[in-house]
Image (tube, rainbow, N blue to C red; front, side, top):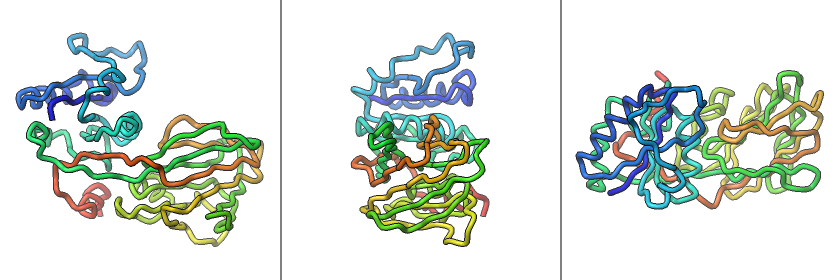
Length: 286
């Protein structure tokens, strides 16, 4: 590997301390490094004046990997750009839990292995999400973690039906529903009572949020199923769809959210041979 991009989260990596260290490690190993920003930063926020920042979209044309510095949110944001280009991504955790990160900030010396192509690639399933309003698609996105339909601050409950291949599998009123990939099973879905699913299982996990009935807490669907979430009664028409924790899109009564396994997979770079279940125990303090 000869050319990598590093995308820091400036709000977490103040003065780019971790990025500077990683850049030195990689350049000493013979890797060309470009520092880019994966999202817009508040103009009033001070960036290090001595660090040159390149245009991400230009650099992606020649990059062989994208290294993110931050928490899971930073990794999720950057993963969409990398997936479209088929570029593998590696996370360095300088956040809190950092479940998706391959390295902690104290392990950055391992980045030198990229120069010798001493790594493996872990492919993760994605969800292709479409929001249908009055018969037409008004929003589409791809999720690595989850797509969440939730009530707003004012709405009391959302009436929700879930269909698998046009057959109703779940019907309830509550605060909403989470459709997660196995990668996202340890995120919001788990907090709402959903199961932990190992990342290579390729399933769609459907977890109600505070359901007002005694239906099963979660439903696990095969990856080839066509999932449809139908939004019924929404008090004061206040409900939202969010994909991977991104911008909230307003959802109205009668709207439909269609989900299916994405055609593309997200590629995660692996430098360590750590078991998923060891990571679960370590990150969740079990």
